[in-house]
Image 1 (cartoon, rainbow, N blue to C red):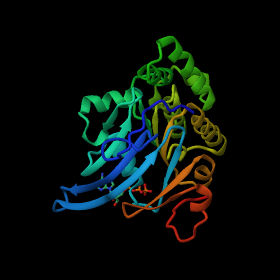
Image 2: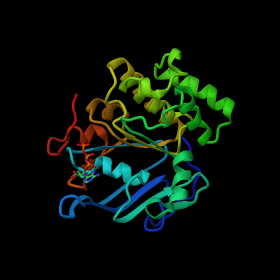
Image 3: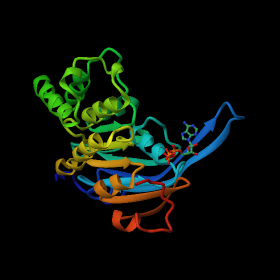
Image 4: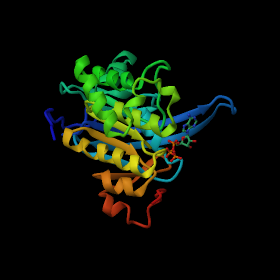
Length: 268
Ligand SMILES: Nc1ncnc2c1ncn2[C@@H]1O[C@H](COP(=O)(O)OP(=O)(O)OP(=O)(O)O)[C@@H](O)[C@H]1O
């Protein structure tokens, strides 16, 4: 595990001491322009921290705000108010909620990864090139990225015969595994995972969970959503339960997942 950054004491001006990510007072409303401009509140003042090598799993019933939180951190969604403090690899504190788009784009390629259930890539890119390009974006030279991409694809069980094919011809589960290979090659400082194993059969799911488990050794901070109690129990170092856009509880998986009073929606 690596932590090379200077602690900043005040989480109103940067991440909490030792944290890679500190979310503070995060609010997000959606305006439904097609339905009378109605407003739907999704996050109502969320606070959480993720440190290096820590895996924080978000849990809570459907509509609790889990995916919205991940998308705000990745800046797919603009936030209403609050801060999303991120400590860069040079030790600088930046507020993702207020960062210019160009700087967000740079962080996304290099320091922050996002893996969802869906593979988003240019249509005519080969499988190998998609994964290798992610490595180059994180600072690897082309040759190293090519070798690392091949290793990552082997690890998630993508047959070599598929490597030069366009990703569009892959099955849902294959796309998901290419996605996780691209997300974990030269692991970023912060990895956001939104149901990354939802379309996988048991054997491939196990291989991908192994890969995610090994991220702890690299010092990657992980913030995840899994609709699967076993995955949370196996991977998470801490669980944050959301309900109605607020943090209801936070604690060790063995405590949180066995608390019958908490509104969890996970399946074995
Ligand atoms: N693009 C959107 N436009 C309008 N409302 C949205 C949008 N995305 C999410 N919401 C609303 O925000 C709230 C939180 O949704 P979110 O998808 O974050 O929940 P979730 O906890 O991830 O749920 P699930 O487990 O079902 O995926 C819900 O009320 C949802 O309807």
